[in-house]
Length: 482
Ligand code: SF4
Image 1 (cartoon, rainbow, N blue to C red):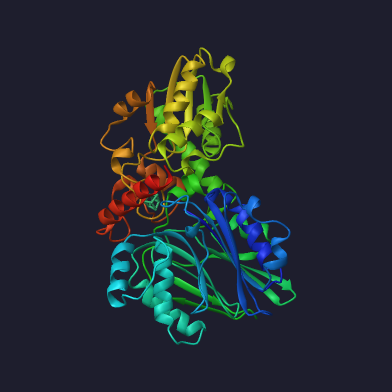
Image 2 (cartoon, rainbow, N blue to C red):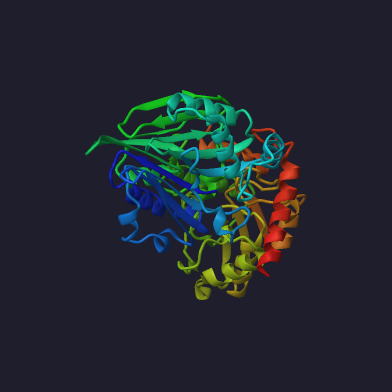
């Protein structure tokens, strides 16, 4: 999961990309990059770095990152976390295009083999599937004019070969901006327009509406599943549905990933989380569970916990206090680092917890690391009972589309009943959202629920190979860094 921004039609494009990325920081904290085209010097300028957006870019940055169009990326690594070569955007200076990608290509290893078989002189600088997308585009664009039509043809040629989830923003050397989204729209991408710039109108793409809202863009709409958009620096917009598919956005965007201020699939993330709480409260009532306090696990589950508190007429209490300077644990990529981070990031207010039946609301239970640690903290604080509820149904299958749910054995819900999970986590009861409850709360006609149901919106026959390779890349990386 990564954050994308693309801006065209304003002289401050790089600064806007920076502000956009600040608003998308939660989508990836491993590193970030911004790329522009300096039309006076006829060259691409790029700055990338590891860590948080505000630590990578400074005022000085924007003296060199000039130009009316920019793309930016904030990275959440599913492989190669420490490798600076994997920071995006990626550039092919021969063809004169650059891209940034959010998602995962399930058949990337097969595609790489096919590209190498077709041309043994092709050189891949990284293990990234995003580089494969760039290569497919460049091959299809060979000797073409860089314009909307040839770009749409190149995107079509790439899309017919790519299997998986991808939202892409790209930049052409003449400062045209383009974007496209996979046929199922698994990963989010939005387009907005702002009138009254020196160039007339400015346009921007972003992974979430919050970034566009913040930058003053209006007429915000989703890039449609399978759609490509091409915008020239003087504001000519061309759009084409390249490969239509059935809309299956990732349910986890509403449950966990997206900012609560954002909207997706015409549903506000805030409302979806509130609904998740209301529906879970019904289930808690149905099971006759009673509690003295409702505690959210900060931050994502707060809205659902408020809804549960109202529906169950049980006091809502913030008794797990977060150290805001510790990064979200889910994003850290090895087990030991995650466990240590959880211990550092949450502190319970023991006097308020002691002797109480605590209903603890978490957005999801993935590996169970966070839950286990939190339960320990609440038990040590003297809770009389701990009931853990998850606003997301049990996650029991891998995600092949860019979220780090890697092997089924690492997932606590895989092959375990609720009672077994409760025992494993040391809680009195565990209550999960149902799949129907999730669908109802998110108010979407269709969703990707692959990691819950094991049914995915794309072919995943390459998935096992993809997983094996990903594990191999991981262990290679660990060996290199230890
Ligand atoms: S498998 Fe799960 S996490 Fe992955 S895209 Fe689908 S719903 Fe989202």
